[in-house]
Image 1 (cartoon, rainbow, N blue to C red):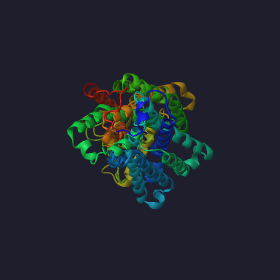
Image 2 (cartoon, rainbow, N blue to C red):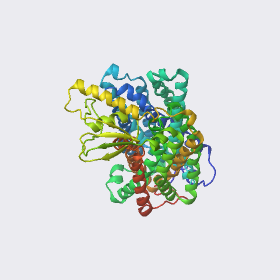
Image 3 (cartoon, rainbow, N blue to C red):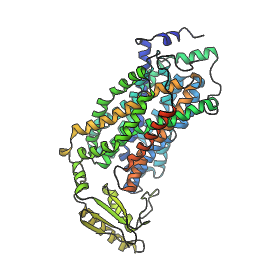
Image 4 (tube, helix red, strand yellow):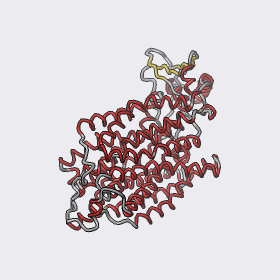
Length: 557
């Protein structure tokens, strides 16, 4: 029998009580702070690479920094298992209170951790360990917050209630950008690069204190309290969730037919576009942050729009349409970003396209994990120079040629095979080759010209990407909560959510930039989110079912 406290929460169909407002506000605010902590690393990856991964070349250093970022995503599913189980055993409130303490503590330590120059190899090792702790914490955060809010929401308004939780990831990114810009403007670019990048991490300790204080004021979920009083809690949530086919089948369908596509659309619209305009289009970091912040301000209200819409027409098809339109339009949108963000780069590509001609097998994937490899083949030397300048190029295999060469429009620069040359001779010839390629590619801009950026169009294109995010993300929380029984809800929804977002989505920046580095095509990395989003559209459309958005949460007891 339901407890007296729980009854009003599932009977009210209209309005929002003061308790419900407090639940939504406290859960959302705490999650904003937690996402803020997590996104600081992604936003400051370029600075972190210079302090913790300095023993390798510049391209490898940045890829390493992205890998360290991805490490946090790798362990998110394990955090989902650990904290999901605790959430179903001891309650939603105390579990996601622990996650924010773990997250905030690890973030603060990143801010005070000495770099490679002081600690040597121990510095990146400790950094990656802290990233793993952050990932574990975040793995338990979302499932707790979404479950907690949904179990307080009245029937017919779960999409609206949980959409506030969905805004927190975007607001957390926005807050991190604001703090980063504020610190950079206050102390100047040089000081920020040297030590100021640490300040946003250190400031997170204040945000942690506020978040913990607010969450301590919350009561336990009425659904969980009722289950506990009636003795209906699961005693083995992992077994019930993943070792019984009836529930495991839903978990797998949720992963491939829902959150995998949602994850890649989210990270393309939130992170990859930020890396793209900074690293590829070479727009000044402060300008890029302002542009992205503007797009977030405009686009974030659509989380609520699509959350409310999902309460009226259902969750599934909003997510499916979001995946489809994203997959179809990513290439034209990112090409338009180049046109309006760095027209000089586009003009150089059109007037003087760069092509690398090489014999099959002469080119290798230039990723140097230990910083000791020397790329001496004729093809590798060309690509090293192009990668350093972030110049897009096309690979052309040409059997039988002795050495690779590069064409820039009608100009040609021949490389040489340095593998058998003495070190001094190789160094001299390599320097001459670099000068020749730099001269031939002089029309490729080192930075985007601020006077030529079409700011309204760039913001407009980024807003479109944010709206795609809101379509796939706003309904997902309510949809997942409604698909699983309350007794194993925290565990069941957390694992597929964090595999979809942590692995499919979290590995996107590294995977996409690795594809770009291997192919020379600045747009080739988009194939990854396009393929995954298309898979989700097909699987979700054919095999997933929608939920009863007007009725009580599926299996509340």
